[in-house]
Length: 475
Image (cartoon, rainbow, N blue to C red; front, side, top):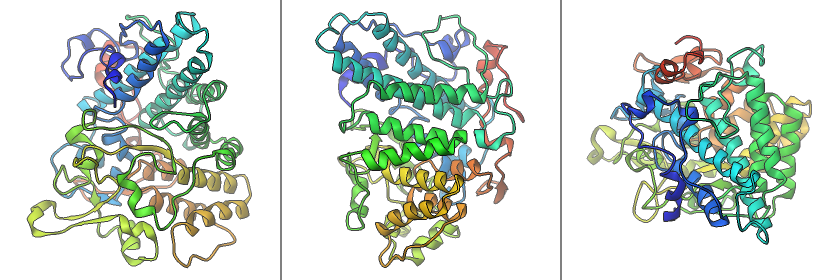
């Protein structure tokens, strides 16, 4: 990213360390933002700063969180543990683990930036807004979409999925919401799941009134915000709304198209490809370095996300060369790789000669087709659901024959095959009250959707500071 990404990215607070004195005195939900936003240029820098924050540290979109849901299932395995992402795969993240503290802090830090920037617009502080209304509106829409996305991914980590619970209005089941500039001594309490998902979808809905529809490489636009709302509605159990959003994206998003079979294998080393509704810009200067997704999916890095060769996904891919997705197996079985030798997903090959440089595809068109299929099936239209699966598979499998209907298991399988190593697998199974198999130090075990470990604990450091916070069950 450009150097101006640092402008608000670094103003957001101190470096992230597990022993920061600052964090003993301040909750992550009210991290200070010191930079004034008074011009359109400042506002641009603010949006850039969000992208910077969410791409250069651990548990962000270019680091462990890019493959978080995959690490927790048994399609992938730790080939040689360096103790980096391994605790995620082994379900050993306890309430004092530094990865939790980093994740909780950095997402709320980004939200603090968003809120200050939105407040500058709403309070009329942008001195040159007159004559630049379209640009200010687009930036406002991007900030609102970011706020929805950041809350959504915090919820995916620290809250139950709404479709898996009996009471979405249960006290303390949601997040501490960060939807305004908060004072330095703010100590918030947790909302309900219903309130959390309403905040997420309200922000994404509000974004649509401001944000532009033109493809904007490296940035959110109307179609990515709408696709993210479709995803959030699916998790919330609003299937009809999810279907409408997904179909509106499929029908209306000009400039985007499904990857074709002849292009599929090559797109992963490229930036801003035809399916990318939103991907972050990662460069040699701004990346997660040794905690990047590329480094975890390579025998020469931290080899903690290699294919489980006895797993269903690897078995399918190696047995079906007619499926173009089988080309995304990286063979690193040479003896020179030592204990890390094995097969790895080839979705993060790096650019510019560096494994660190991969643009994470936060949402792409294939997922929207699967959202539409899942939502259509759940609203009673199995034929429509099959149509979306057929369209996707026609672009993936030589000699594919259309099917007349599909089951939820068929659709979930396509999530695994199409979106492996893209932070989908365990989330989509648990969302549908399915269990997954997990590779753990103690051996393979079923992790059911209601297992308390599917949700991360609130960092104990936050609870120690703010006694109003209620810990997740089981911790």
